Image 1 (cartoon, one colour):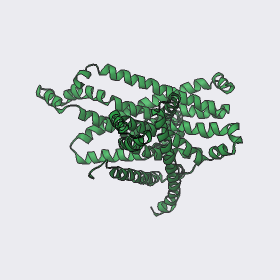
Image 2 (cartoon, one colour):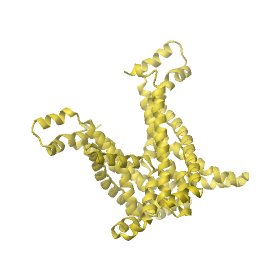
Image 3 (spheres, each protein chain N blue to C red):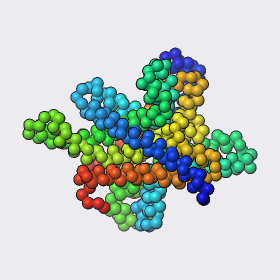
Image 4 (tube, each protein chain N blue to C red):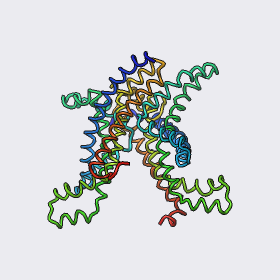
Length: 237
Length: 228
């Protein structure tokens, strides 16, 4: 209890909250990248080209069977030297030192969550009845119009439950980016526990924050499913 | 290229064995934990069911890295733990602590998979077995468990891969397993992509073997009638 009081009064509480904000930010950017990869991958996988389908399968197999941490280390160590050289050349060392771990984090979360969302979107794509696309084409919609008005709105609704899972995992995976120097919630807890010498309450607090973020986003997904599903339920029943 | 194989491969193979040991030990403990927690959730004893719910929710709702640090740096630093020889044996060693953390984490996910299987067994089946004169133990061992097992197995086997991937976090508490050694090689040499490929292939080998075993189990359980 004393330790908890000390943590909250000595500024580590706000440090944890700022870390939590960074965690949410990196997860959001990462999952947006991941959703784009997922939609692209799903389109390639359902498309006819065998080479592309094989490549997408290879990507999902590799990223899903290899530890997230190893992927993060690969991204970090393969780019840390070129990034430092670039920053030197542009004379932007300070900017790079704060942006580089963020960039690694976003790309890593994007690649990892992307590999899981390919399957989510493939399932959603196949859930849309082909007759709808045929009907849209028959009344004269172009490919782009058809995609924008028929496929995409339904795609997102069908993909929501799966996307919720991908998001929850992405959120937890961001903790790993702390190991390459990004100051997010996990890193804030590590720094805080070293400074206050009270690791137990520090990690419990950080764990609680992760949990709270997860619960709130879960509620958001439930709301979104209900809200965007207003026009869908009748057709589903 | 030759230098690479002389330098990196023996080091990574050494890590491969550590990863394999931690991973397999964690899978065994996680399976026991998962099964126990699933049965607790299904029991009519309220506090037991609540405890299992709390366990599964807490461990699925937070990152494994937090759980690992909490156990190793948090609980491992408690005076009480340092005084108990048994607890100190468990918490003082990184590898043992990693096995504990991964087992607890993976067990929480497995409990959900197993619970889903148990819930999928139709009430009529167990009613019929009871009416037939089977004892509660018989109903479980002959009707509920075999049916639940088949329903839960695919989700369970997914968790095996996740448990193996989880072992990579042991490197963060100074256990030199595959990812930890790969990190060391990446930071010391220019063989970054090469190290990643070799380490990745080793992980792929473990996971493919596990999924292959899972496939054989599914065949043996009659879940796959003909191989595709």
